[in-house]
Length: 240
Ligand SMILES: [Fe+2]
Ligand SMILES: [Fe+2]
Picture 1 (cartoon, rainbow, N blue to C red):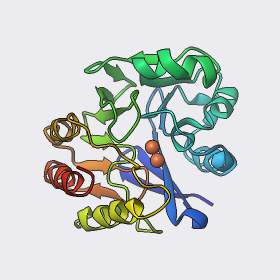
Picture 2 (picture 1 turned 120 degrees about the vertical axis):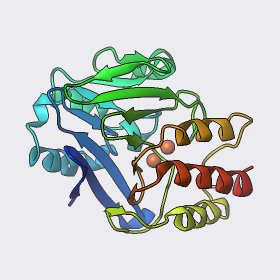
Picture 3 (picture 1 turned 30 degrees about the horizontal axis):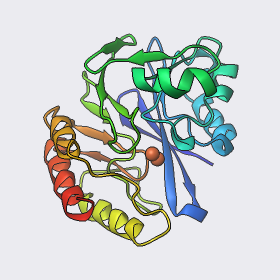
């Protein structure tokens, strides 16, 4: 069963803890004139996520389905969502659209975003940031909601365990632990470290987000710039 938390006005975190992975999988629903779901969640979680969304809006009204990159937890149930929401369009990077999404994932053509492009859904404005290979995959991107300064940061700020939905205390320790633990196991090299990584993380920091909507773990509220700068340091140290 999913846990729903309003992490900013009309921004809902829908979270399911999967014991086998010791990991939360979070989707975010933004309630607006054109409702936006960020991350579809795994295909296996679709019934639970749909049920959770239905307590907030009519799921058939979802207009945008955003995600960072091609991976099951990001967009694995895209078809299922587009089947129940007849006007839902996938929202991803232009690279994602051209390379993978239109061919093998989406029911109808995706909206491929360029870096710096803005999508307005009613009261909210989403700035698209192209972040190739951050957290991973060529097509990676992120959305920054400008009115409330919420950064939908995908796998960045990954924390293991069944943690609290939101926190304003330091999460970097947990992120470091998760990265270091990951490097010791079969899922090592989760995130590449390239000559672009540090610059991309600092560019995200410069947005001065107030809320970091992480896919795995608690959403962080507070000084998002400082948290992102600290994450950049942890990445350099552990992955660099
Ligand atoms: Fe990922
Ligand atoms: Fe993920």
